[in-house]
Amino acid sequence: MEKLIRHLTILLVLLLAACPQLYADGRLPGCVHADKSRLWRFEGDGLEGFYDKLDSCYLFGSRGVNVWQLGDSHLQAEFFPDRMRHNFVSHRPDIRYVRGILFPYSAAGTNYLGDYRLSLVGKWSFSSLLKPGAESIGISGRTAATSDANASVTVSMNKSGSSEYSFRILHVFGYADRDGFRPVATAGGRRYEGEKTSYGYAIRLDCDAQEAEISFVMPSGCSFVLSGIAPDVEGPAFRYFSSGVNGAEVCQWNRCSRLMQEAACYTPDLVIIGLGTNDAAVRKGTFNSAQYRKEYLQLIASIRRMAPGCALILVPSNDIYLSGVNNRWNRDVERSVYEVAREAGAAVWDWLDVMGGLGSMNSWQKAGLGAKDRIHMTRDGYNVTADLLYGAIMQDYIRTARTAQ
Image 1 (cartoon, one colour):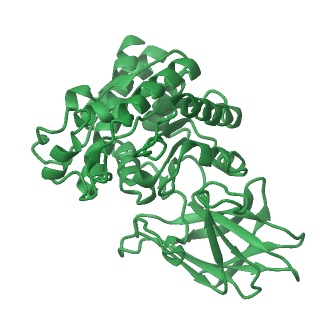
Image 2 (spheres, rainbow, N blue to C red):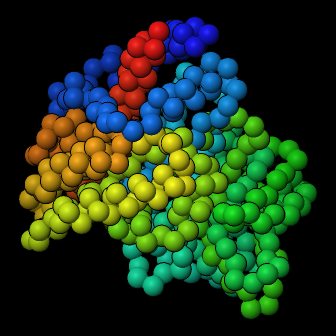
């Protein structure tokens, strides 16, 4: 039976296109080293278990799959994770999937994808993992805090006018400092009270919705700290959520005391980590590879305690320029990531090599894939990057399925 399932999986993936391409004719600019796009696997990476879950999801829809992508500014704008999300569900358009973690980025004065709206009413203050002395930080790496009894949040999906996303459940990540606090959602003219959970609160509706207003029962003197809202559906679904903060380093995510507690809402089957760009952005200083590896191993240990057996893929930094100078410390980041992968048991997708190594950002920029700052990608660049990473995962998935026959 196992061999039959694996064989059917291979046929399904091959027939339904294993790797969507940004360019209709399948050709990529010469600056993209697609031949380097593969997973370098090390013992204990957990990918076989993840592939078994993909089998059940793709073939039978009998279980959901949870993927968590953790990183920095490459993720905050969400071009990269959004492309990954759509790639994973491209094989089975009938599979239900959800949008991921929402945060009021606009009110906080920072960038995001903009395909949804989180509108705030009342007085709120904002913080992030970059700020010392900030409130306990969770899943988004940011917080919005209020003690205003008249505060509310309106969730509006599909800002573009489509009907791609709907929800039956609203996971409200965060915490209050007084008993008696609870969120209340109004959707379709009906009110739904939230229930306390380990990660915050869950509000369950009795019908699908695309918009809801969340108000708060706020005891006197109470403060509430919001770290994100995740619209969800009932039953098996593909859930791809991401956490990215502009400027984030590994050590800063380690200081987020509520991160794993809130991530456990969607206990991930696969975690993709891309951190190191900011750790190595030391300009005149020296990149501390030993400290970086120590912090990275600590982060992975926390993830494995939260989600034992989950698969791990580590992504070294892309090529960047700082003040017009190519940042050569990124080769040290790359070497350190491989060392961490060997020690902790993780796979590696080598973004730096896929780009073409040190100095390759210039070529990517000329091809319209690298941004003007020569640190980030354009939207097309993130789409290409996501397609290549996704393709590497699918190629390994197919190879593993064939080996199992």
